[in-house]
Image (cartoon, rainbow, N blue to C red; front, side):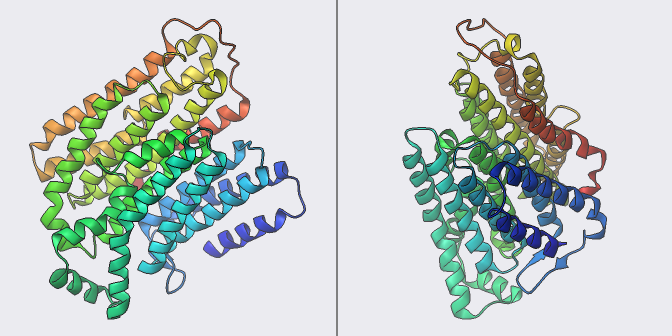
Length: 441
């Protein structure tokens, strides 16, 4: 299966020589979508660990992430209309290969290298195709913020290589006898920043505001999941230290999610609100996973997939409004239901999914996370109640403020293009139909 994937991606690079960019875009988009569908259909034959080589392999957790990567990139390439199309497609394909290698990597050094290369790619995407005046500042802020917190993990890798401790048992002995709590927190900051956890999220808002729409979609749907996936992989090695500090990490993440849910109610910029919403969901995801119950890990895994589809669709909707009004402010985009009634329906569907309304995949994930938190401590019910309540409130606030109210009559707004509706439906359909077969998770 994976050899077919690498062969197809290699063929895509060769095609750049002979065909027009528009034909290449359509071909790449359909190929990636067919790969994702093929992976879904052959899922039951590949749920066991499949080792490709000594350093590459597929686990049950990386398999779904790979499907999400192919699905999101197929939609991004479908609507990408940048002036320098060829360069944009090359950058996207390089990032695609990098993400595939990250989710397939079994060695820590390769894992870390691919983890950091993805940051470099999104750095160039923000600088090259970002629209804001502060895009260079935002890109460098993101780069140095994440690289600074990555240094302790790099030191840990050098210690492993120097000590020749490549065996998992030897690694666990190293953790138990040598590493203290402070170095552990700094080392896991690599993943906490990428998630991002509360208080580590400053770079995300700047990056989202200045990034192009496809950059925001990749950042929210896939790159944030690198942090949670990496943390999930590290739990096996650092289990004793996680057990010592999990109370503080769970409370810190959950309280941060509640605080940022309140902050969402004070936002007037649609893109910042959706970015804050991403941080809120990732905080609860981390809290559920760190309970170390199987229900919590599965619930967090479901939220990873559901949030990837939902947040990507919301950023795409924000971009559609921005293209028509040249503003992301909700006060200028009021009354959109009168201009674009079909697009208002799409806003309703994605806002309802964002608040975990039935029958979205978010609902299943949050129910499982709620169960795991209740199993860990009954008092967590109070915090989860506030999280769910505020999540519904800011999603309704976003929808009602945009779609209702007095229209701005000086605006000349057209209805959306057909490709916009196709991309939105390709986000919404798997988000709301995957609950019919939860055996995927």
